[in-house]
Image (cartoon, rainbow, N blue to C red; front, side, top):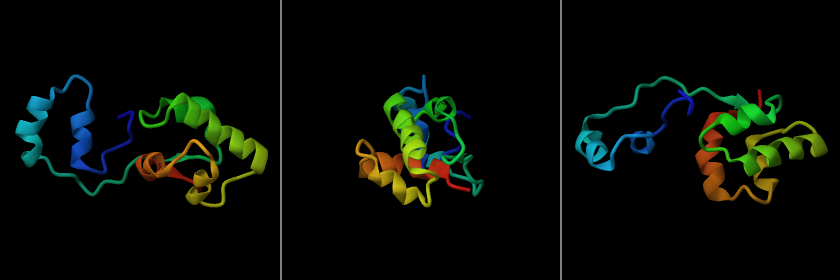
Length: 101
């Protein structure tokens, strides 16, 4: 629920209180539906909303809001890469859950 949906079966393994041994046993049985994930609009989201997402740290949430406050609305998600603390790995992990609608 907090994540907004799964985009990969491996994410189920990150579920709190799910032992890795159990995940490994059931992983081959899991399939993703075609349901879309819940996305956060980074052009209007407040710090708290961003920070509630499991993949968005306090520092990243703050940087997203501060960049928007200083530079105006995001034109694309690629603009996040202009933020120094958002490297390719972080971008790849959070971008499926963000939008600029």
